[in-house]
Amino acid sequence: MKTLAEIRKGYDSGSYSVRELWSRIHEEALRLESMNIWIHLLTAEEIEPYLSYIENHDKEELPLWGIPFAIKDNIDLAGIPTTAGCAEYTYIPAENAYVVERLLRAGALPIGKTNMDQFATGLVGTRSPYGEVHNAYREEYISGGSSSGSAVAVAKDLAVFALGTDTAGSGRVPASLNHLVGWKPSVGAWSNRGVVPACESIDCVTVFTHTVEDAEYIDGIVRAYDETYRYSKRIAAVMEEDAQTIYLPKEEPVFYGDEAEYYRKKWQETVAYIKAHYPNIKTYDTKELSEAASILYDGPWVAERYAGLKEYLDDHADTLFPVTGEIICGAIKKTMTAVDLFQAMHRLAEIKQRVHALLKDSVLILPTNGGTFTRKQVDENPIATNSQMGLYTNHCNLLDLCAVDVPIGFADNNLPMGITLFAKSGMEGMAAKTGREISAGMTANDGNNFADNTKKRGDKTIETFQNGKEKSERMLRNSKKKLVGNNVEIGVCGLHMRGYALESQMLALGAVYDRTTTTSEEYKLYELATKPAKPGLMKVMTGGQKQEIEIWDMPKEKLGDFLSMIPSPLGLGKLSTAEGKEVIGFLCEEYAVAGAKDITATGGWRYRH
Image 1 (cartoon, rainbow, N blue to C red):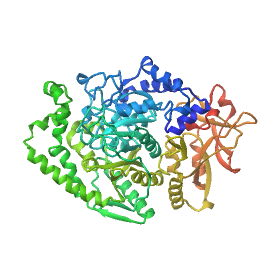
Image 2: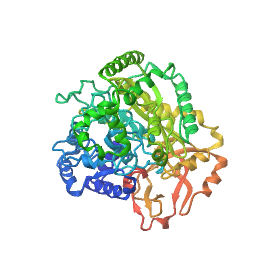
Image 3: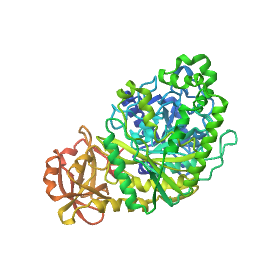
Image 4: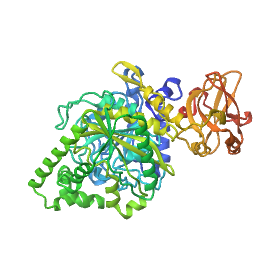
């Protein structure tokens, strides 16, 4: 379960009902309890009104019919406790937050409230009395924060999308560390009514998804002017357009942590890709961005964190997580004055004016993070490690920029990395278009699946921006392909596909992803009762249908090595494709499907749940 399109396909094919899908998600969420993703999972009784609402409407009536989503636990869901990561602060809201209400009316299905760095103060995901949230790919590493549980819920397929918040990077850092899209809209474009404040004047509700298209779709549902919320703004709907210039940092960014060199290499690869595919590249000295970022925590703005919670903190400061209390309550110990505040405001205005002029029709690209840390390393040095995670994010909201984090693949050892595209307020479409193209090119052979999607706006359904994606993938493919005569085409249908556990075998053998297609109609697909579960693809006389496969180009001399890695009852044989070709592909021996689950109707391994 990854995208809106995949869930809709499952509903349309009858693979599951909305109740069955919720039950599967709930069961899996309980199984992953040790990852500390959730503060509150909705029970069967609590979910019932939402299931009934969805079932009483046709799919065509509700744009998010039955789409599971998660909610950061500083955003209100009526009747469910809001803790903001602090049990003593808990209250039960009578109304939904503004953005939640719009999503529920559109038919989205709330799975639960997610764990977070307490009071949204942190970028690491370890500052919670409800437990440290584990990274979705390497559990010993941080998840990023403060929207930690929301990011990991999407990465672990417990939700198609999840709401977070972002004041200093909380909706972008966790996205980068968990191989997701992190969409931070313009300040004020989404209403914060019903959200526990961090720095209310610059807070943003954000969304985590697997694709830029899905993030844009969610934005189209929740973006609206809220006349009852004091910081709401009238900002036009997202419209995609080309960036006239791409700005990159003048100096190489700082990289940190034990994996710093791998992150540096991945950034350098990305810069090389951008320069090879975009004609107008310029550099920008980011020193002023760093100065703006320092104002958020080292300047007077930290007092806004205390001001938003003053009524509670005046009597309950001792209930805070230690490092959270040190940061928030430290604000009242600072000797800054109103004069300091106005001086900071004036300096920010100067920087903002220059940055907005620079980005009039352009985007700025920075690494979202320059490295990562294990949870143990953060526990040993919580302030310094957290500060490094915010080096390229903290300036954003103070300078009234929108931002989109997109995955660029993996730095090393299964550690994801992302880049952030910054644009002026209201220019999300420019950041989105450029980001999607770069991400598709960088991840075409690096473990990310950007499935085909459709997108609805109003009553119209339009095809989703595939041309740029396909062009980027094709250019990357052609740049890496060896001579055709030295390669063979391999069709894979399961764990060797992009984003799955055995993709690393393909890469290690020098294979290059070429395209996604389907088999001919003579195939049945089974989920074999192995650990982990594997697909069993069989050619049959009757009862078959097309199944999704990926075609990879593999050096001929590596074919024998590949065959030796394949365990019984699987083997290699001739696979017929919908294109009328035959490729070498995985086939399953007939005896192995006895008692296996027939998943032919799903149309492919990715859609089996």
